[in-house]
Length: 336
Image (tube, rainbow, N blue to C red; front, side, top):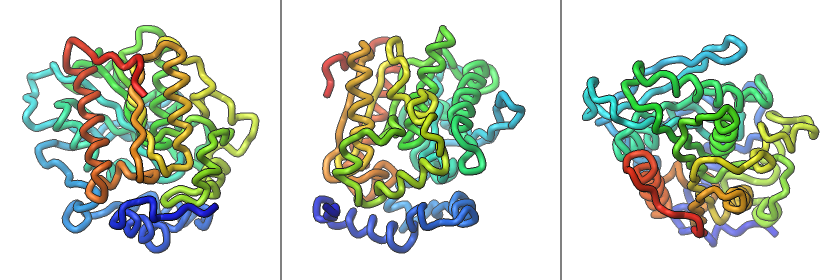
């Protein structure tokens, strides 16, 4: 049954219709050249655009760096540091961020509103990783770039002037998958610096085993057909779909850092997050899972269009502060 936009608030329904039908045609309709062009698209950091995306916090400075990958590629990094934090003040935590886009699209600049918000509100250094994208770079390149960059960042406390023993990984959609995979790989290495992981409507199962994919097959912002197209670009081989580097749901989950999992109720991959939160909890990992009602996939990038976007940010900041900035952390063993 086709999803009805009536389930969403009117303003959000109108915005998603504009994006789906005018500004952002679905990925399955794009050529490789069209995908490459869209990757570079950003919106001006001024009204009326910031009425939807939220403003870029000018109290945060933005610099650049690179991290080495295992195959010799220099992974670009976009680094955010609150201007209120003095150069001599190294007692600030680090948040490593991975953007969304189905492992195919997206860019770090588009996430300036969220990353500057996190840097300012958590009072942390935020490092956004510009990992390589498909179809030019298929699985598991993005996952290995995410892990290599995070591992390198964890050793750069002096360069970043930050405390890299207090780190979190954060990502939305495909970036949520990369955050989850990175947490698993750092756990396997031993002595992980991660105190927390925050997964925003993460993709965790490339087999498409989540019931919500059929329930919301024609949802705004992301459809079943688009999910299939993203998968065909990133992980075309069926043999890869259950690999933990591609589908973190099938990885070993015990011993991972506490997690915040945020899902969107009208999202076809809602149950990827729901199932991952349940699996983490079953493995003994403290989890807070919040399912936001009446919003689609991607709502976190539109905080001005829906109160849920602002609530998601407040919850995310509160969780990061609790795990990175205080000596005590909340008990989420029974959170649902």
